Image: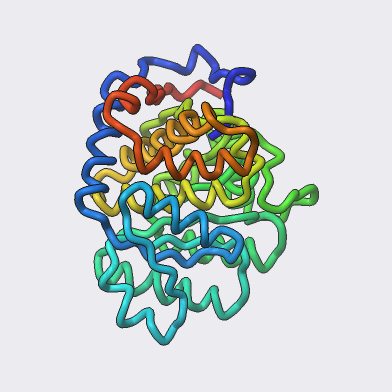
Length: 292
């Protein structure tokens, strides 16, 4: 989800470009705007504002409910659940697990963001327990996906910041997708998305997104909204959500003077994004697994 000018994907991986993906991205965004799905977000304090405004600007309806007293009544009403472990504490973990269970019993999709999964034993254990509950989609950076793959705490962890590129975690993402049944997305200069069989690279975004806190959290929320309107195709919904978010950041960057104005421009661009702009700028490439 950053500028990929300096780090293009390996050309030998690409087997064809985004010809069918751009219309699908527009169709998903149109459906989202028409349906305005209700997305329950159990997310960290740092991200709540941007997550809510990202969903609202794209056309969804966010709700930040994490109380165990409300979950049994409210979660069955939502169209998707988004779980983000950024500011994790034990009582929130209990609420997350309860919400996931209620969502699954109600046949509602849910999406996991394993923020800083490898930073501590408590956090890693929580993320692995949530992963076992079968999210429809997992979205993290290279370090987070590798931590889930290895099942161990990182000695050189930088918290929510990744010390790995998305391409470093491709095989780990494939393995996690195969054992969990989840679509796995890895954010980076090129966003990687796989269901364990299919593999795509999303080439949209700007590097300055890294200077705005919670953009990763926000794009995972957008993935949840896209999965809500196309729950039978979480792979496609994940790839198009990443691309739409990336295109919006590219448009917003055109008028931005720095991270603060880009944040505003990103939200504005998501709201005003039109068919022509999206069709011209979506960059999703079908990739081929390389032999190890």
